[in-house]
Length: 110
Image (cartoon, rainbow, N blue to C red):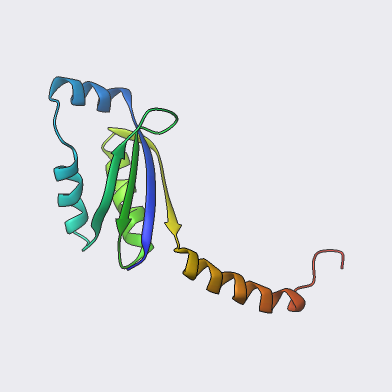
């Protein structure tokens, strides 16, 4: 299954909720992922520009984007960004495909 990386930050209300009831959010996150047949591969809480970094597997990128939208709509998190991740071998195949297409592209003004 494809891998996705999701970055998010807690909103003020999300932080207030977490501080009023400290808990392992991994259980709640996996329960939501189960609804679309996705799996949390790794979940990290970080310091810096993102509070949450999650690596997940899902059959379709639309599932991970929909999950991010649903969580963001709760108001608990903000700045949710989900990106597709490829293994080195997968990206090598993509680069090979791109190489075969470069001669067929005419840039603007060309």
